[in-house]
Length: 91
Image (cartoon, rainbow, N blue to C red; front, side, top):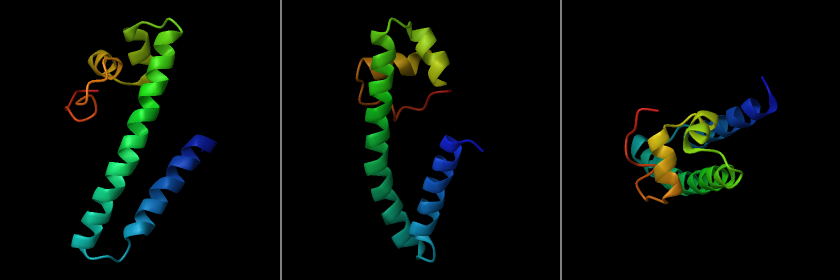
């Protein structure tokens, strides 16, 4: 497992530990709060990366391929569409 995969696994383990042993109501509330805060951070970081690739001259298709997301999602992210991360899309 490479360093990045290990980091991701540590985050997943931390999330598991955060909710371990809690009743479902408390677990759902805590995970909702976590999703809001972490989700926003991830969206900002991904948008910054996509914009950086665009600034380097990459096409939307190249960005999509490099990022593992759809062409349409790239367009939404670059357009700063607020639904870019909430609208279901086959990726």
